[in-house]
Amino acid sequence: MKKLLINDIKWFVLIILASIIAWTSVFSILNKPKDYETLKLFISTSSFSEEKINEHLNNEEQYKDVIIHGLDITNENYTASLQTNGVLYSDILVLNEDVLEFEGLDNAFVKLENNYLSQYGIDLNDYELIYVNETPIGIVIYNGTTNLLSEYMTFGGNSKYFLCLNTESYHVDKYSVKEKNVSNKAFETLATLLK
Picture 1 (cartoon, rainbow, N blue to C red):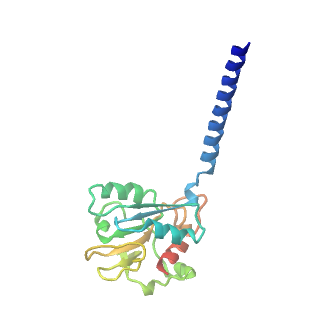
Picture 2 (cartoon, rainbow, N blue to C red; picture 1 turned 120 degrees about the horizontal axis):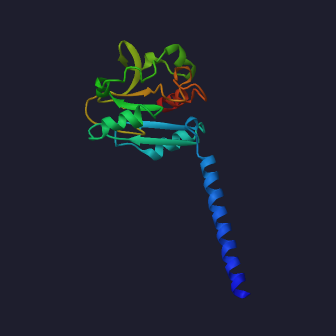
């Protein structure tokens, strides 16, 4: 009888543990931030402070999560990473002007329009811009001497680096190729970074 009771207790404990593990897994999946609740940054340098960027952007309480992928342009995996982590998945990109030579990036970036950006306190006349086919797609943040984001990242050399927004993002409002859950958060974040 004692042996039967001990076996029953073992099964009871195993069932309870399995239930706890199952429910924990279900709740962690349900609580994981969705793509439209997450900001993804792609930064073309390995010299950046993830802590400062997160601290600054999380103060805005716009996102449940901020994911930063940084890779120096000289890294052998840079092109593949740009095309996947950057162009397909990131909301805001910090890129070296040399990437404009890559094929297939023509429609990847949001066209910057002064009348739209002015509602976020951004006047394009105050910044040097990067153009693709005579269309402004980026704001220069480093021109070889001046770094507008020196608090968060550093760059080397004389190449220009620029901030741009991805059309694959949920956070670029009417410029997004997404159909549901779009917002203007990327423009708000852009304004926050440029303050």
